[in-house]
Image (cartoon, helix red, strand yellow):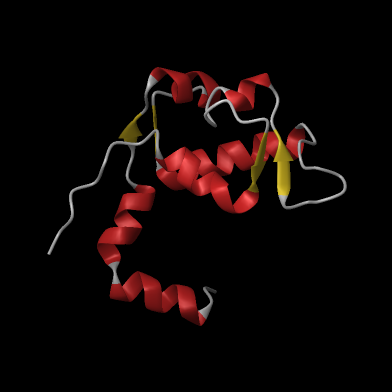
Length: 102
């Protein structure tokens, strides 16, 4: 069952939800990281998050910070450390711009 806020966001803005789940052709750097040629924004973020958790890349002293290894740096603009709140924006940079609908 979805939380009330999420239900409202989905019903109020279905095009925004579609942008998260539509498959998109990936650029080569992200394609190499994910291992697929097409993936959704949400699927890509989940793959990156899974990679971070599997490789224990969260800072042990501050769980809101990710210490990037070489593979992760390749998709996160070469940054050594990234805060969790920055992740979606950095991943979104790899996706083509969506047309705004009125």
